[in-house]
Length: 230
Image (tube, rainbow, N blue to C red; front, side, top):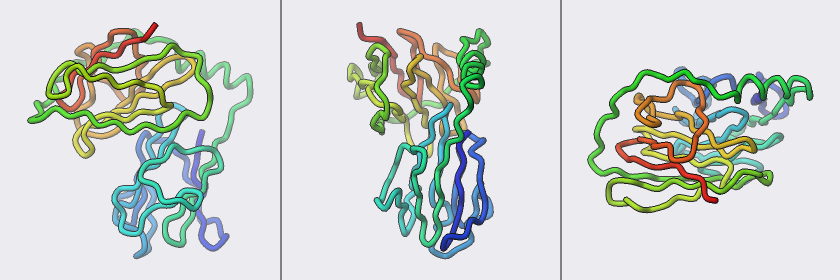
C-alpha cells in the first residue's frame, strides 16, 4: 500500500496512508490531509489511487504544486517522488508486499466477478465532450493494443488509443473516470462525480472493473466502445 510522508524543514510531521480512492490536500479542514498554512490553497491538490497506481492533480492552486522540483498539473506518482507545496514536502512511498502476498493479492483482487451493480440513469449532457489526460507508462506492457471509439455527439467516430498506463476521461467537476492499462488487463474506475460511469448499462461500484472487448462505456453523456486491436 502507498503512503505520503509529510514533512517540513526536515522534520516528519505525519504519515498518510492512501487508503481512499480520492484524497484531497489543502488548508480547509474538510480535506483528507489538512495543511493549515496560508501558502496552501483551500483545496490545493488531490491524489487518486486506482488499484496499485496513484496520480497527483493540482486543483488550480494559487502557488502551484511541484514534483521533484518541477511544476505539475497532473502527475503519475512513482515510488520516492517528492511533492512540494510551499514549505511542506510529501514523499510518495510504496510498500511492496512479499512474493507470497503478491501472488495471493493477484488471485483475490483481479479474479473476474459476476456481481453486477444496480443500473442507474446518467443525467443528459448539453454537449457531450470527452477529455483525456494520459501519463507515460513506466513499464513495458504485454497486452494487445486497445482503444475507445466515441459513438455519439460531435466527436462520434473519433478513436482514442489506450497506450498509456493511466488515461482519465470525462468532464472535471461533473464526472471523471480512469482507465488503467495493466499487464493482466484494462480496468475502469470511477474518480469524480455523484453519478458513476456505466458499462453495458450497469453502473460501476467503488471497485475498478475489468474491461472486455466491445464493452460500451457511458460517461458524462458520451457513449464509447472499448475494443481490442488485433
